[in-house]
Image (cartoon, rainbow, N blue to C red):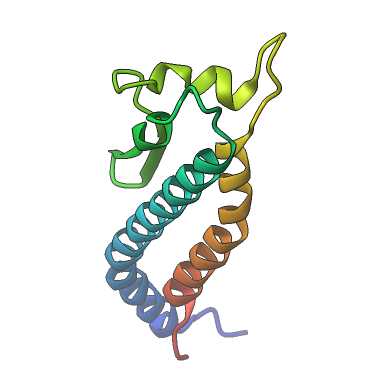
Length: 133
């Protein structure tokens, strides 16, 4: 029995992944940013329709920040800026209170974005893993 093993395909895969990982990081960040933009836009649109008449400035406070933690963790924080005019009403409007029902403007926006986000991240990973043998 021959104990030799041909490592050429393993080395080719290693080179492919070494080239693909930086592109995957860049593409994943773009997907996170695009998803944050979509959620912010939809949240604002939802809030314009459902926000009470006494909170007309609230939709304009909704924004997002994107942060990277190391090379492989990218996170978007989306929501009202509590320092903005009526931004502090965000928790009350989103989650409701004893006397006010929840509006779930942000929750509905996130729910709408979830399948699009997952599909785009799947495409990023498919491109990373696709290689010719």
